[in-house]
Length: 286
Ligand code: ATR
Image (cartoon, rainbow, N blue to C red; front, side, top):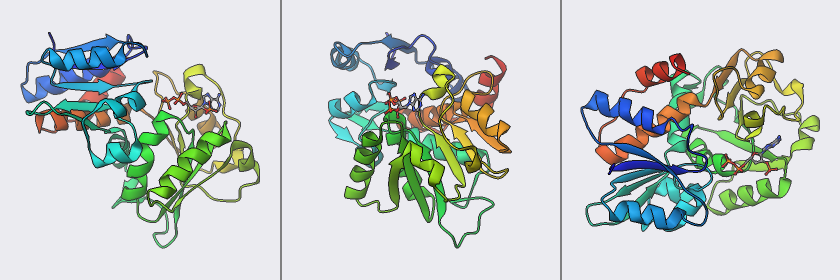
């Protein structure tokens, strides 16, 4: 059996096994990695079985990150704050430690892109608050908000979502745990919003369906940084739309995917693998 695995549904197109194999090869580790297709009914049995049979580490992907949060015996602070788990490590005493490396993977990609400079968004006046627009209030948003709020100095995150109540629930939760610089508004109110956003993040699944978000094009300027957490071979629908409306800084989520996997690898093996060669390999073999 493999000692590492990713659990999700769907799972066939997951790149996690390929990324793990490339990291392991660089570091000189020869441990297998499986893809586990699970359902809401059997996820927790299969996860516990995996660890009972000798599993050492698991990645958890959509839609089980919130379920995994409740199945771990111990949580890192960033998993606790995001209330979702994308990485589990079995500790020597048998305890299942849940972590969330999505936020740190996202930040490491912003650094790779040189969009963050000394924990600030580059090209902005450091005395002013940096406005971030986060579109979406699902699992993907949960993983990145706490790390963004703690990493980027003087930032403010405005969360918008098609279903406004979900953005309200998420915002109230972050405010309750002490983050004051987060707010929300209904998606349609963006048409009356006069804020200037330095970074716009698409954390919805809209690009998966090639859907165009209903947001005003005046949000985009040549220096607006636009990041889609989704990725594919060609530009995603969000990236195409941002480019068409004038942004010169657009990126998709492939870098974040490799970044979060590198941080999971660090948790499991106490070694940090190289991100760039893996990212280049994935781009060239899409
Ligand atoms: P994930 O775990 O990948 O975040 P999710 O929890 O199902 O997936 O969340 C999907 C997010 O994408 C939600 O914020 C969803 O909005 P709703 O809460 O209103 O459903 C958003 N979403 C999906 N398709 C969208 C679209 N075409 N336009 C706007 N938002 C969309």
